[in-house]
Length: 157
Image 1 (cartoon, rainbow, N blue to C red):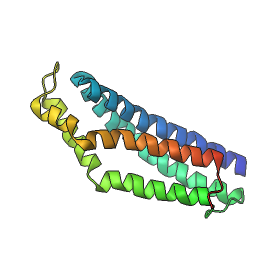
Image 2: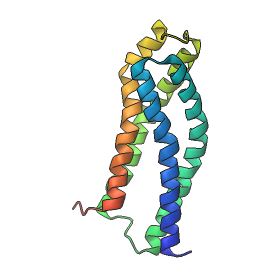
Image 3: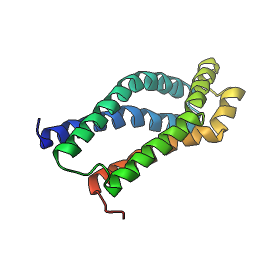
């Protein structure tokens, strides 16, 4: 498979990954800000399903990205790629290791046990917690920055 096809598969799978993962996260952010319990419940359930598809797609995309870089004679140590690696490891590592995924799980349990028309005290407490903003805002910001780096390929040093 040539460079163009490898790059095409890389781009298509990353677009699918971002759509599945970030689309639901942005919906969760909006529902949380509006305190829409029914919508929040539904989107938290959808995110479980979409993550099951998004995670393998991300691995496939990364694999095809490396293969495309090698086939296209793109240095895997190019400055824009190194910054991308750091953003992926530090950014998503901070979310996972810092408790972001556990917070989403607690949010889901609280939404399920909350009355449908208004958030319970526990759900309100979790929605007001700083992690609620971080786990919903940080991933789209990271992905937007990574997409910028991948498309523009700036020479950073």
